Length: 201
Image (cartoon, rainbow, N blue to C red; front, top):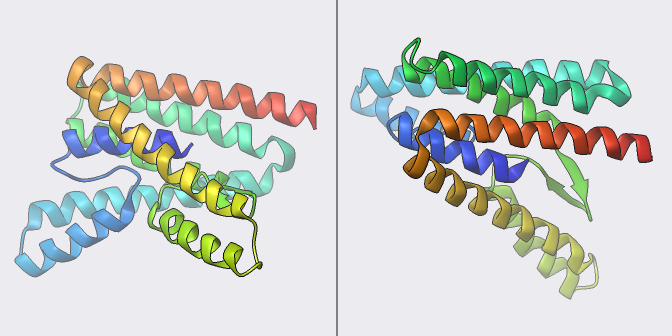
């Protein structure tokens, strides 16, 4: 999930004038700078991405909390629908408007984060993964944590960077539409894995 967040951030950065579709810290920084500089265009689009991400987080959290054991697959189905909507509307409506569906999907996805070896993974805010790596390393050296927690945080950061790299390569080689289809296909894989994991449990 973290790699997918990085992938769609590369898509958003390329297509939306350096705005992100999952990394709201960067968008919030740009939003504040645009407010200070009086740049209404950036204020409007950064605000729209932030608002749609917030909407996705709200919807995803409601679905995940209400549906118990099938919550994760159901949120992933909704995320898939959002990505396919963005792909199918790209070219029909303004590209920036179509990509807002991806921001909704990323907000939903953040409701699915999981603790792995004490590290919170699957989120799209990567600053926490970097801090968590350093913090867990320090606590492990003091005997208060396991090195596995630092490794899980570091792997989360690496997954995000790998996703960004693949997203940038995909957009450059194939364009926005195929990149969105690739992201949707990855969500299908996540759905299958989540269903198999729950059945195994």
